[in-house]
Image 1: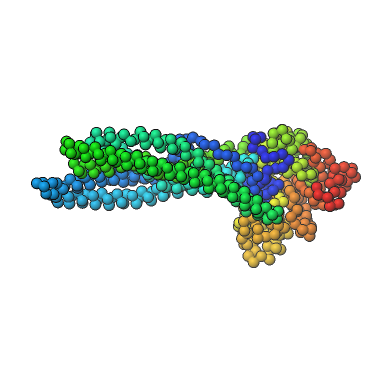
Image 2: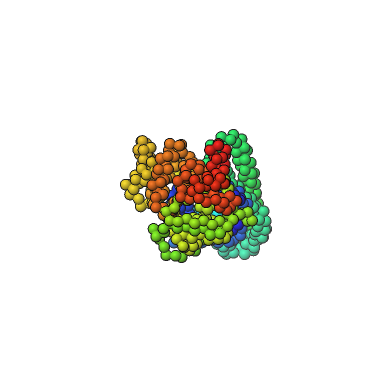
Length: 637
């Protein structure tokens, strides 16, 4: 694991098991799409500033994603080609229609027969053009939504395969912004720009062809403004691009701030920090406002600049066309009219890109952020042993474990611990002593800096992560429940569980009584995070989820800290039944919950300083005795 991605020393990062991992068997990805559960909670890491990336590379990758709908894309290109070609014949027919009017003996004479034929061709041309344009819009929408669907699915799947270390160093709001805002910006650009860009290229070369047929010299005159147009657009593009990247970065940061405020609202209110939260939000929002204004203002500069150059080209073409008509008769009024329209179409591609530059740059900035996540390495799983979760017995050995969340600041310093099958081991110690870090390393949420961990004499690095995590169930202090029914939340620990198994798990966890009192019972739909239940009720559901997972190894991390004393007694009874014949690691500050443990391990300074049962450790009058006495004396530990 890369050390620079680690959070501050002494505490696992926010969002790690100690603060919100879903109870049940943890699975790869640790999110709602995972098989067994995952971490929740707020992100503590600050968002790194986006660095501009290679626009050409990003565009090429985006084209490859769009190219997945190759048959629809081919149909779209053919349809756009038809629309463009039909559109290019329009000025020629209009010029021919004008030339049916002639001045003969100082009188205007109209060739009505030719005019009727030309008008009929124009009507048919415009009708076919309208039909192909409608088909083009349908195909464009189809490709746009297919692209969004593919990118969003790929991004969600990628996030579910990232390591815990990687997700803990990103704010949830920023990841959500990439999933929603950035993908939506790409969608808008694809739906609006792909047809325009391809059509513009065809129009450019088509208009050039018709202009050369009409008059080579006037065409060369029209070319005078092209180098100037390219120069201005290139300079403005380079200048403006950084504002669009910064805008997307600030938008992700703003989303993260909103998410933290919503999730931690009770804490914010309890500490009277509403003003500070509003001030911090306003600061980010003000930065986004200023950057958005700059990006839009500078993005809008290109349009007028291109329009000015296009109008300059229009004047030059008109002037030279009239000159050739008057002096040499080499051009007719219809030819001049056609050349003027073709000059507009000739200049249209650059103007089109200029006018859509803001949305294109926003989309490319969003695509860069999406691809940046897609390029992040997946969670490493080098496990090759052919072993099933049901085969694991639960013997655990920690040998010379060394680990720190940041370089040169170790949390565990050569820890050794042996846990036999079926043993109940309690781990105690002051905050920051490394209790939860042991869980993080056993489940391979983080990789060791040194030492080895064995399960049934197998190095856990050789056990497939899914197998390892399927053999473990975790019940945490901060319960994560999903906006679904109670039944579905319990079944999250085992998707194949029957109705009888669900109810048995609820009874074992002492949750069936309050569930049956609810109007819809097991079909009661929970709000996000289960906020329509009390903390104790949420904890009981988490325990029921662990019961139904039927693990070989059980981890209880402050599992009863959010319940009252009476409920705690019921939970302890349920836990005794759950822990029977299972290897159990119990992490607790409330020492009254671990008196019956087979062995109590006391951590201090990253090493084990005492081992023994409750009575033995009290008799030693050492570190455990101090913790015990301080707790019952009412002193915070």
